[in-house]
Image (cartoon, rainbow, N blue to C red; front, side):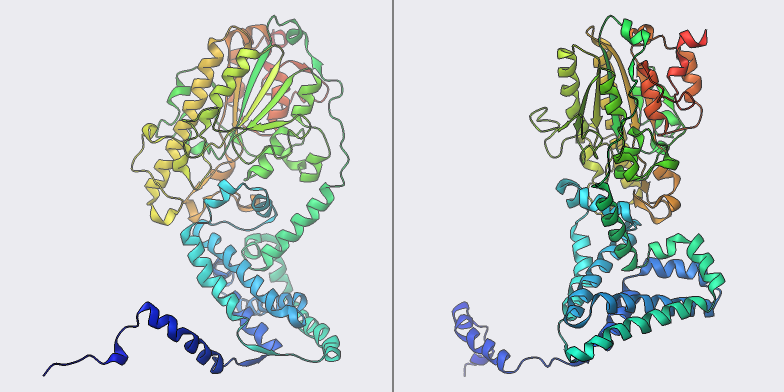
Length: 568
């Protein structure tokens, strides 16, 4: 006797499934999953509890450090923060806005929590600026499969679940008093919790800024609001001229050939991994052989390009710097143009950050050097720019080259494989896929590539007989490579480690340049050993080029004060 399979258990063919699918869907529609009915306040309580419990890992870590030994204060501050989260939902989500606002806050908190946990990134105003002003190339390195997976699981799915229950809505007139009452009650609990031990809590909020900087969604909402306010104010600033008396000094005016300064604005190079600064790996072998002047102790103005780059070209010192202050007055490029220099800004990064808004700028492309741009353009793409500038130079020129440098997390794209000396090196934007030594190897290979580009640039400048040449390299900010659980950069300055705020700076002078402009090399080397910062750039470039102006501060000029006519 032969056994026959039960036809009802046999797998459906594609045609059979297509035949039965309309019936299956009709059955689901006639017997839908039951949707619970929930009150407005109950939904806010659930969402607040989820956001606080699951999407605030960094906040709870700081809470444990601060209040771990005082359970009562821990409980009271937790109550206050829970009330703040409820207040946010109540205030921004009355009536039918509730579920869209709740879903949005879950998504925001989930995204911020992922990047804080995986890389130590906190969301502040400058991070929001970086998000809005980044390029597609840069941002896609952060939107990784791992990031998407984490945000979908902790953000997208819970946000979708917010729309599953039916919310019992009150009438229109009832809502007129229910919304302000809900907001008032949440505010009362928040204030009551804080004032229960105001002396302690006020001190914590004043001195431990990292606590609320890690709180979601509050930190992100505040950062977006501050960014929006700054952008609105920035559109109303009036430009003030700087150094209206700028003119060539006597040595520059007497020069028999045009002067060319190539100013490399570096990206994400940290002083700790710079070979000339004593790093245990030689990451600057080319510069070490070319007689450069190294500045081993230089501080950055900020920890992100959006802050440091404008700050270093501005006449404002770090203590006085603000975005509005920068936008409301001319910068170094404007002064150089006024003194008769041709200024060119060529970019291989995220743009000029409004520094060249009045003098103009261009972006590199693959036509300059197809080999250097096989995937993303490495900084070797700048070499043809220097070559063409030298070939056609007829007037004093400053060429600013904004590098991609060591911008992470895709360090492996910053150098060609054949020049990778430190292996195995991380070949992923997902740091979780790599060991810490592999990440450091990739970063150091990027430093070697910067050394390669700077060294070849020096050789080109030294070989020309068409101009008096000099080169200055200064990185915008540093980088964290896992120290203290931090990666990348852009940490708020109040808590940023030195790995993000100490940067390399190098000066090279051609023989004809230093002779024509009367610069004392021994004096320069001695001054380079003194502590410096990006505050010095504006004044030192003016001094280097012998530009006469009352706007140049001799106390901040590390080059012009070494002019032999002034020392002898």
